[in-house]
Image 1 (cartoon, helix red, strand yellow):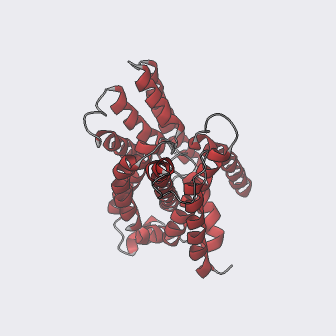
Image 2: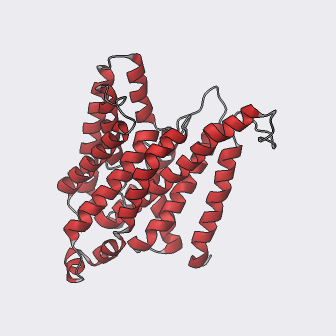
Image 3: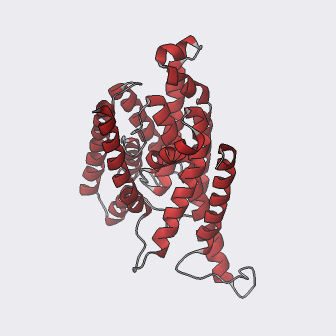
Length: 324
């Protein structure tokens, strides 16, 4: 396949998966959902499946782009918001707003707390690992952030004042698109779209960094500005996504590696294909959880972890073999 056909093919795939996401479920919808006699099917379509499909597309695209940007900036194939603790820090921010009972003050409180947690995670990651971290340094930094966030979430869960709060905390830890409505979509979409705009604005610095920091500076790139613009963009993406879906990991790790053989390894050129591929992966995963047998749906975050953990292991093993 020529590279010029990659993006159109991915767009067609996402369109097909979006239609399947709307059509597939435990309740079969009739073809004539707009008839006066089929109000239930119409309600399921408009209030549940349509926002769920759009949110899956949006979150998947954002996480795929965020993973490609982090791998390009840190010049490390293992970089991704989920594996490096940024998603967990976003979840910690959301959980703290639930634990201290401030999430109900205003609908925007929980997403903002998630964004602040993600941005704090990005800043801590830059401080701990630096912009050109080794594999070991990057993995250790991610372990530190993840451990800190999970410890905080576990503490909130242990001290939870009510079963409702505990249930909400568990929900953020697992990650899911189930029962999401246009209310959640309205909260997440502005944050994610603005975050994606910030990340796309870093395409030139990401390409320049392939020459190293000194090479990028010689091209007139302001690396400090690029670093914090990227931190803000990824913070908005991960915080906005995690605030409404919980932790959905490994999307940003898997997709850029699948896209590189198709579009090349230039970081700036990888952002858009990774976004489209991320949307396809999340939509496909959400379709799978609805088709699996059983009384209740498996959480999407669990499915992504079952796919991503072996992928991470194989990737780490192949990188280790190249270094020996």
